[in-house]
Image (tube, rainbow, N blue to C red; front, side, top):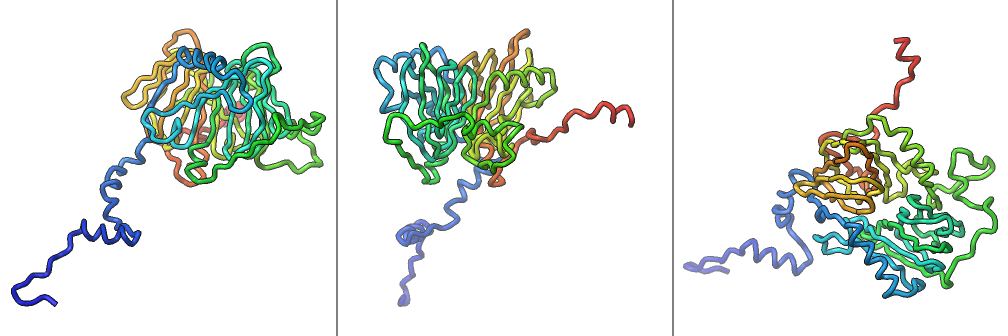
Length: 368
């Protein structure tokens, strides 16, 4: 009890915070400084960055020398964001490149991370086996290895096979859902007949007597088919923010490529300069062909064929095809499906995804 002439000392807020910490409590007022930085939207993770093919490719070849075999470990480079304290290209995606030498088999395993493979230099005799199905890896094909599917890589060609790997590893590990299982042998058993291939059931004509899986389906998007569609639509108006951009729709759900990764191919017509926009999703890019510039914030990324780059979430960006005669083609992967499922996906200044109607029926236009 305080006595006359003695004042009771008032505890400071800092002292009170220490008391709470000892009880594993925290006052909401301690977040005020952080919340004040979010008034304009989420804080971008990492920085825009460009990985030049002229620098990466020699290291891929060097890796073949310092790692004579690729049986016990993938000969893969991960592209790490320079501003990241995590091992990711973005906070949710990990992009990298992998190389296999002629005659090699990269051992079979499976993991909780979903992955896609975009082939840079392929061959009909290069393939990824996914759950016992051989998926050829010709140049610019896209191969799906969904979460928890057995997969190994086989190079039966006479040249090196090189492809782009993109995984949702940072997201999965951030959720503490990481798991990895080696198969136990160098390769997995293959399905005996193509009539048993689940991937062959992903087209527009399907067995009427079967119930198809709704997830984790092996699949190959042939560049021959993709490029044919891209060429047919090349003169479309497309998106003012991304040019003529096509989604690699999931063959069963018709939605995102994978539950955590959506993949796109986009064509920038000669001299095209897209409008600036930003979105809450992060995106990694690979230059299929052409040269140009992507301006991210105040950073100019000057890219050419086989370069790779990253656009962090919620950063203003635009694409410019500097050529007056040649098209440019970009492959990209985004974490958009995760944000959309959580109700967190948005864009500024306007939404660009699935907002325009398909071309009108000519007869209806005449009859108006």
